[in-house]
Length: 308
Image (cartoon, rainbow, N blue to C red; front, top):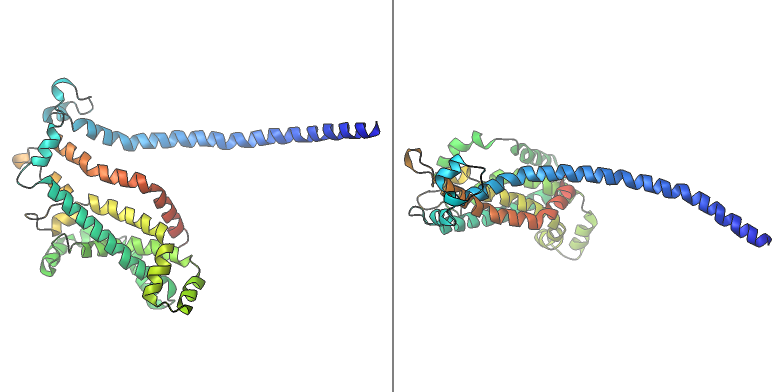
């Protein structure tokens, strides 16, 4: 009997003690839930703010030119609806085919991004591992280049590019390297400083030289930052209008933004429907690529900038 009383009292005590814990757990679980709903609401509003302009452009890409100007926010129906006519017009406008602009944009974006990633990651590795005043000065020069506006050098850039033969899709990546190196070196340096030096020392003991160590040891560890920097550079170069417009020989080479600008005819006449159609075609690859790789952007920025 005494044992039964002891067991019952123990159960009651444990029940009494467990009850406030449940309430406490319930209270603490409600706090992040409220914050989660608020955050979801805010992010939904922000998403709508960013998605609505794209949706409006998509609607207007199926409208006749006059209705794009008069009924911009109306749904394309009746006389306003022209179907795929704007897309066909955008493809066949003028004597310069749209697919050539897509090809040149692709070539410039891929070559420029590859050159930036290889050169800046090497530079960042050297800056992070060599503790000297020269490396510090070079690093701060890279960082300072991020705040220098492009408009300061744009007037002399065109003549310089022409004299050096940098006015083709295969040579303009050198110019993009100069303008895109600052941010890339900043992010790579911050990430490399957080990598253990012992791994590189072990590679050196095994007989790896600097180049082999970089490509076999460092590059695999730089994968998150490589992807994030690559995505940011791709989105910038693919949508860039001013630099190719100033540098390229436009009679032979045009990127997608330049091709869209040429849809504006003489005497101020603008075919807005065809422009909207080509804008949609130009942003589809970027949106798809970004949505596929967006998690790597967060990882890379957190791993690079925070560690730096």
